[in-house]
Amino acid sequence: MEIPPLRERADDIAELASHFVAVAARVEGKAKPELSPETLRVLAGHTWPGNVRELENVVRRAVVLSDVGRIEPSHSAVAREVAGGGRPGVGGHLDGNLLKAVEMLERRMILDALEKNGWVKAKAARTLA
Image 1 (tube, rainbow, N blue to C red):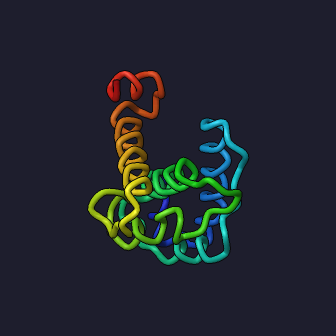
Image 2 (tube, rainbow, N blue to C red):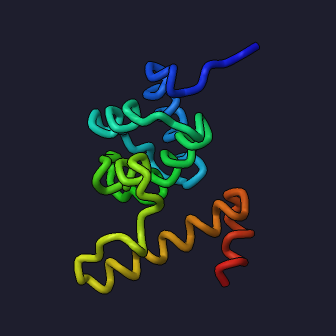
């Protein structure tokens, strides 16, 4: 059975993203945030060279980084990641707020540790200790 790449199944993106949001929220112990219409448009407009796994990782990061009940491209870095800008955090524009810069660095380090350790929190915590 051959499944076409995600870029050829744009109609599936919203449903897949919603599923990945629910899974990530459950894993993180958070309330499930909603995906804004603009976020869904950004996701649907991407070519997804990494296919479904890339979509899952982008959505998972958005859930981890979101601190409100709605995922918007601007605060979740969805648009930046999808546009090829890489992970949010160090290397991006810093507005001069030291606490915000430290928080961004901390989040990036946590996400990197989680990814390197298969999203096993205990292993990630040991690598960060």
